[in-house]
Length: 222
View 1 (cartoon, rainbow, N blue to C red):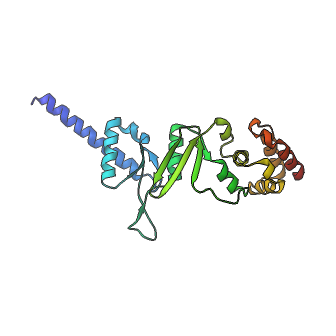
View 2: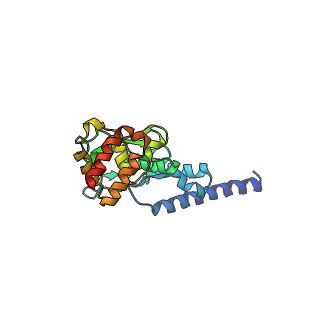
View 3: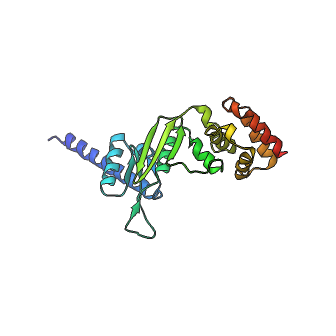
């Protein structure tokens, strides 16, 4: 074997080792039990070398693959250190959406339940997203993600968005103004803030059937 070929092989192996070290070093600074995308590590080397490094770490138990392209550092359970938890399925779904720049939010029934407009909790966790529909399974946890329109995912992480999605899962004929007042109370809004939220929703075309009930709600807040 020629000198140049031997040198080339050694160089490739050194690079592979350095990528593994870089991946392991960055991983050591990440919180346990929090999912992350392997894409966060691609700046450390070639895609293939990073994937091989992550695969080796998964084999040794340093990380656990929680979904395609997503991993988590196992976290010992405080009460039983021998048992290790990886990540919550809902956190994996959120990380997946954030990585691919999709919008994501709890589906309407979940929002209605959180606001007290629905007394029964949803049987399983369901999220709406602008991305493709899929399911995430982590241990015994399952989260279903359903594709929906941008319109239903307006005002992410804002009170008007939470109320919007809650209303979309209910019928205005079977929802009292008192129930809506309870929802407003749970949003912890000042009177002027609540009125602003209601007016935004009243102008939303997808809540056309709610316009009369929303006007009644605004009148009750004055």
